[in-house]
Length: 90
Image (cartoon, rainbow, N blue to C red; front, top):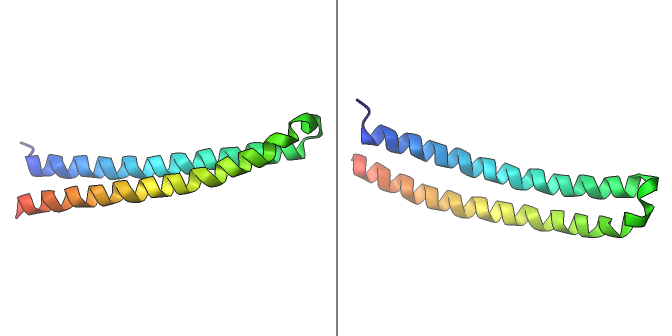
């Protein structure tokens, strides 16, 4: 039979992995915006869209800190929950 303690640890591990995946999704989105900006600058046929390159770079620079801050906040919450679980064990 699986104990609650084991289930709590598995749930905690899933939560940590989900938090990491979310950070990676923010980074991936940021890189996408950089790539789009570089594509617009680099391809001659997009000359009418060059005004969009700077905002894409700006959005990319805004997304990274949002993702990192979100990751850090959630990591602190997860750490508190982990401490509570460990106190229940002892």
